[in-house]
Length: 172
Image 1: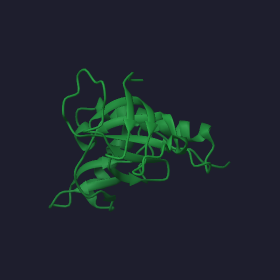
Image 2: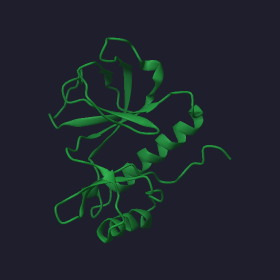
Image 3: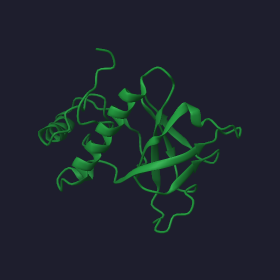
Image 4: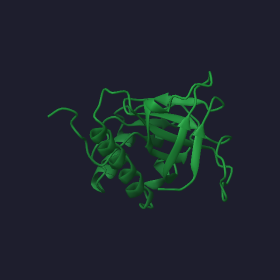
């Protein structure tokens, strides 16, 4: 895990909240970073809302991180995902009113990636997106059913998010 400590505060902009995590912009709020390169970045922090056991959330987190690492190593597929910067430790999260809301998150279940500007939509089952996702599956990223994509003006995928190595059933 990267050793930098991150405080997400009221200047951060929340892009999206999903079933497992909330994504924050961090371009202006990273502190004490030696080699920060001014690339716009996003941090996904996994939620602790009490509706899912911590062990389950951790499995999903590790599966998503492994999927990013797997895809990042593939020369043909890495262009379809945000650049992955690895796991990070979030020190605390402050809401827009200045309240510490860290207890709503698993602060040690967070990763940093490139921020991608655009309108992500649940992947339409168009031919090109399905072909790319089949390639994800072929290299071991098996759970792509919840992914979202940005499509260009020719309806071809440019970026894809929300994929994991495998699905974990919440209740068996």
